[in-house]
Length: 132
Image (cartoon, rainbow, N blue to C red):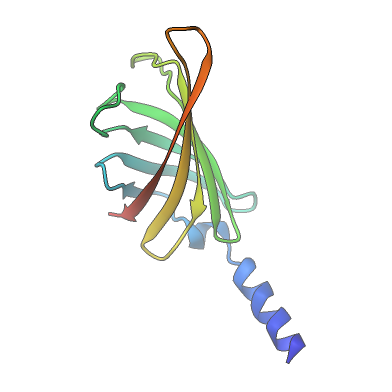
């Protein structure tokens, strides 16, 4: 029985990255923001794409920003440095961590920014991305 459990765990954690997070693919969260996965290196699980923020109450909306991340064993982490050549510099970085499901990616995020007091601050929240 122990051997069967070990084999099942190995099979679950050995799912290739491209099977967990197809490229290309597009995901939308509950605030209407878009995560587009454009490239995925299957052996390493690293991916790149764009993120378009459409969340009410946040700046840097409607513009694509580069996103980079990694997916492995059903876990995902990605970040956006809110600077881009053709978009406003929002002077923030957001990092998401979560799990990849069949049709959703539930995540927790942390946004780091420099306030008007020139000190670093952070905000946290949760997003659930659904595959389009």
